[in-house]
Amino acid sequence: MAAPEAAATVAADKPVIEIESLSLTFQTADGPVFALSEIDLTIGSGDFVSLIGPSGCGKTTLLRLIADLEQPTEGRIAVNGVSPEQARRNRAYGYVFQAPALYPWRTVEHNVTLPLEIMGIPAAERRERAERYLELVNLRGFERKYPWQLSGGMQQRVSIARALSFEPELLLMDEPFGALDEITRDHLNGHLVRLWQRTRKTVVFVTHSIPEAVFLSSRIVVISPRPGRVIDVIDCNLPPDRTLDVRETPEFLAIAHRVRQGLRSARSYDD
Amino acid sequence: MTSGLQTVSPASGGLAAGLWDRLRRGKAGPVAVVCLAILVIWYAGAVYLNSAQLIDRYGRQKIDWTASRLIADAWSMKRPVLPAPHQILADLDSSILKQRLTSKRNLAYHAWVTLSSTLVGFVMGTALGIALAVGIVHVRTLDRSLLPWIIASQTVPILAIAPMVIVILGNVGFTGLVPKAIISMYLCFFPVAIGMVKGLRSPDRLQLDLMRTYSATPLQVFTRLRWPSSAPYLFASLKVAIAISLVGAIVGELPTGAQAGLGARMLVGSYYGQTVQIWSALIVAALLAGAMVGVIGMVERVILRRAGLTG
Image 1 (cartoon, chains in turn green, cyan):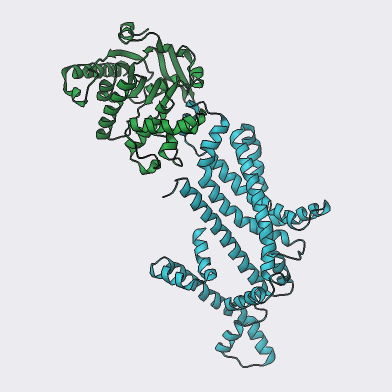
Image 2: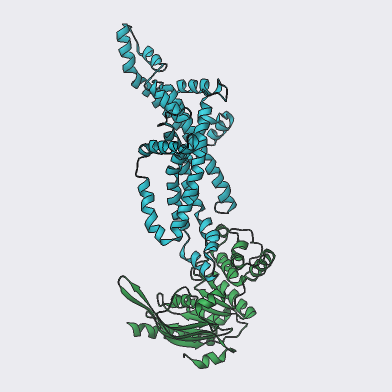
């Protein structure tokens, strides 16, 4: 198990995600591609864990494995103590993709209520939840708009509201702000950190931005280039009421430095 | 499709004020130019194609003729090779407006006969096409087994099978509208099936993954994702389908020596060398097709706008 001390630092009674010696190999026409190798990771309740690594290192794949969107070749994953498939059937997690993946023929409100419709929640409550979670992502008043009438950042906030709407305890976020400009990204990072502090959901967050990972996370998992391995797990306890200004502090810079070193060592290791 | 409709509508519309308004705003200008060009070519073509017959007749009757006489005669022959547009208009006038609407001599009656089997065939073909597409998208073995047959079905010339369909169905007691509608259906299920296979497969991976994260049932994925995604593809297919459905109905009217319908009028016209009558039936068929494509276009705009897919 990687870094048991780190797991103990979060107030976790039982782990939300347990990953043991997980490997994934894709069989392609050009031979096998080793995507992930021997991953061990434990994520506790209320943790905000960032998976950081260079493009193509398998961090998105790891998230998809947790979500039961891919199947591992070897190893074991448990989500809330059950298999990822069972967890998916229990609707244990909300998934935020790289792109907003909104349905263009649905209004903002109806995009947010899509999972609620599928889960058979009555119309009155659907409306009430859409209102609440659009409020949470600062999008009140946009209920009747269609996705194409919104900017990219607003669309991604709708997709976050959609993931929150059915109130999962676990949020899986796959580079949700990757396609956005720096200014919007900073803004949404501020949003997300406040959201996490308010709701204390468990978040697994994939990114390749060091400042983003350090700013948001309670723990950072550094992953090597393909085949993806965990090369460092960094505790990251910046003050809970942090703002973007925290990025100028020595603590922040020290953590960012350690992350950068981890990424650099991985590169030389691979070459 | 829409541009084809636009060239048709000024001729049929008769809303002179609206046309003038559009002309000034620049939309109708290009349409008017194209219409004018067609008329010029048509009149010139009538002279060119009919002159040989006329010169031959002048020679036999020993008539001195001039160019202006030739042109005037070429545009007013009883059985021209190519009738002039005003002759067709006159024929349309006498065969539609000058007849009782319920009379079997009225061209509008024949148009209605053809239209009714076109629409029945179109509805059946659309239903069949959608059903096949749903099966192909959801059942892997159907994808492999059905699609080649669907494509093969369209390589058989419809003129070759139409008489067999009519005869076979006639033997089992189906006459009139049903056999023609079935021929229409045979033609028009194809673009609907192909378009809908594409449309139902158009959701991207993220949109499908999203449904998986919700553990949505296949029915929920269909109603909430695949079906709405396919709407633009469906309408594009329907526009093709309605036009060839009309072709199917007309072809279906030929082998029976049918008593009624636009196809029957064309057949009778060609028996007796009544080229003007053939052309009238052709023009009515074109107007019908244009109008039907236009109606589908309108329904498309209303539905896609309501679904927020267009501004």
